[in-house]
Length: 146
Image (cartoon, rainbow, N blue to C red; front, side, top):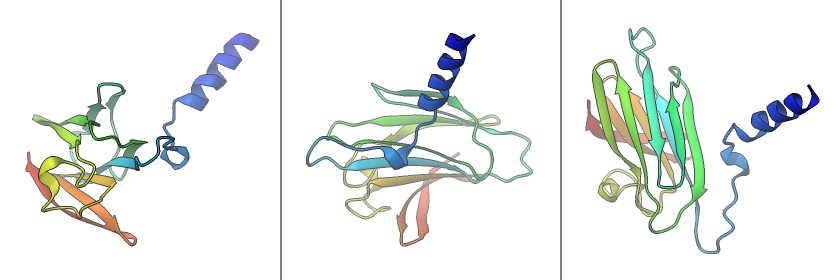
């Protein structure tokens, strides 16, 4: 019984991916973050399903509720790549959500300022928006239509 309790406590400690405590121990490489915000209509018949991964990390299938922020942090290196697959009802999209240390994604230069390390993907009824934070506000533009 004690061993089971220890295993459960261990899993509870390692399962949440807390980006607040993420530390990049490699000099000259920034701590980066990817956020997936579910801003679909609250009265939607379908929920959002997201699967994000890299070559080293697989976050599994997630089902964020409306208003949730599914996020993770990592040490940004020149070859870092994360992709996500998004499903909403009969709609689905797959694309890289991080592959560029300067603009989140290679084709994000017209959307986010150079040096953006906090990448916000805002999932809405008409598509997915790429954004960044300035002050306490998120600025975003449509990146992909459903």
